[in-house]
Length: 130
Image 1 (tube, rainbow, N blue to C red):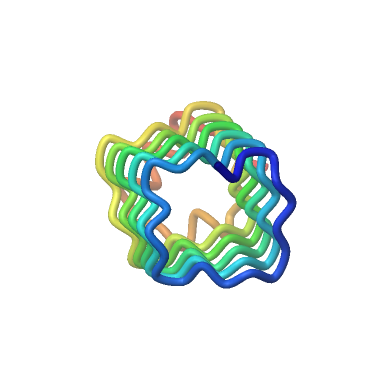
Image 2 (image 1 turned 90 degrees about the horizontal axis):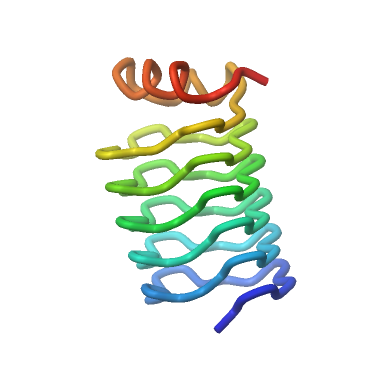
């Protein structure tokens, strides 16, 4: 259980963290490239400048998290709860989405530029431009 921890400059690339509780955890400049985060609770986590390239976030709960400058390129975000998150400068290039929840997510134009047109319309409808 990594709940409510403060983790800086760690490398969890390729790790299996599925079903983990990382809620309220600070992950600053952490590498999670290709990690399995299926069914992981990341609610209210601070994922500042976190490298999440190619992670599997299927069924993950990221509600209330801060993804400031997070790299989610090529991530799998199937059925992921992204409600009430901060998506300022988050990069979603190549990420796959299905059944996504962006309710009250805060985003900026840089984030919008990294997602497909259909997902962009969902974010604009459910979220708030910063």
